Length: 634
Image (cartoon, rainbow, N blue to C red; front, side, top):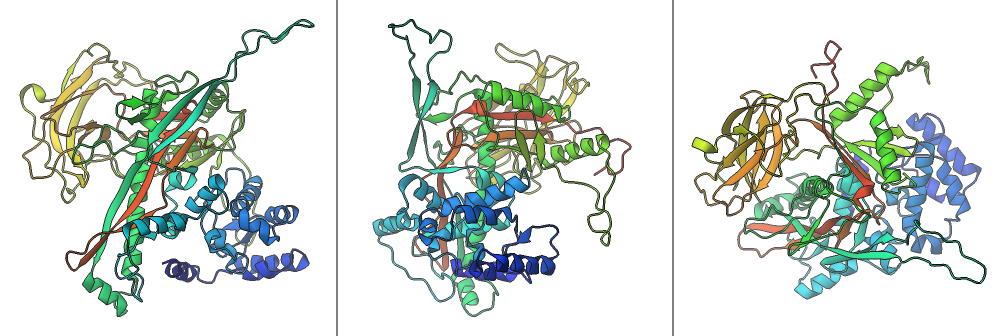
């Protein structure tokens, strides 16, 4: 499997220099000469050079390697993870805001004798070594599971024609993350190994008290203080997708008729599908959404944890959030107003003052592409600089990507995120129903249609007479609903419209449609300002649990607005936020009952929000008014 992936990666590199000669060259003048050759060959500006994986690396790395004596094989053997950190640190020093997946095997097999180091930073092998010592092997975990299953290796000459063996697909996940870098949160967040399905940790609530005095008289005794801790935990959840190929397709692959290894392609596609689910769950995970049998199978994502101030553990147990974090403390509702750079100063101050964050080196802001675009427009309209041609022969190159914002409290890097919508990439109702999805909701009648009224006890309306964008939220809104289960989403049913006054809310009742044999686990509610579910302004505003419910009543208080943007700031220090991972990505065989050979691709993990005060959510971000400017219609 790994050989096939490596061969394809090499083929995709085209004419890029491999730099294997650099691995063998001494750290001397010959080393610099090789760099110069590659610079000329690839047209790299300045002192940077390109690795065989296509990544630009700063020469500061050379200095780090000299100072830390990485030519010593014994050091490399036990600290491959530190090698990667040094490489990433060298580049981040040269270009603030840089981050990405680092390819361990970029120098080829000459430099690394241990094949287990040919995995990406933060993956399961490196995680295990960091926490359990240098002897830890992810493949050993898989081997133990395989012994328990008593499986045999029945692979063929072409890839893996049958899935009758348990496999470690870490290499597949590495390749997917390297080439498909829109899986930004899984790629970036730290992962910690969990040795059992229940991951536990201690939260330090206080070192003592500073409200008294530490002074005492000669011969006396200081009073001292008492440290406070809380013990928390969360259940690892199990995620997977089902993949397979027909025996006929396997034969076609063996005979060379398919041009590609069909098993490898299925593994890759399955890994991409599964990681897409993970990206969405990190943000929108909701334990109330069950599986098709009514079991609790999801953990709470960042939105639930930050808005509710708790994260569900299991059996009605929730984690106590440390240091007095309360529901919504680090949530800012923009109410349709556009995002401005000045907000980062306030967020930075909040992180330092309430989150006690002293270093922003592990901080990152994930945002919708629309938010990043508007920030770039703000910069272009407020900053004017004379263009200077770096290379007069190539001409001027206007525009500079926004790498982040340097606040008074620390640097906040920017990354655009394609998985910040509740419903797919467009956040609109599907145009076709997914296979084995439930029937669409029934059309409402009577009092079930959307109805505007004053809010009930304990409900706050966010339909403002004048919101932060300077407009009124009063008006007529149109609603649709879809049915959702493990297999996908149905077509939308029009629920009706309601005319809302400031201070009111809209209540509606959603009922499952005629059963088609597929259960309903949730309803997604969509809202727009015109009676057209395909309109650009129509988007998803909520997903509510519906398993085994005769009907579900939903109240729209305007707490989430359709087709608005989001910014999610995360401090990925493992003591604040982490992904508890129980095993590497696995390929699990299924019994062969037909000429279709099927298997599962599995990931066992949980998002652990240990310190929500060191994260921040900005929601309902509107667009910058670009009326009359070129490209405003885009």
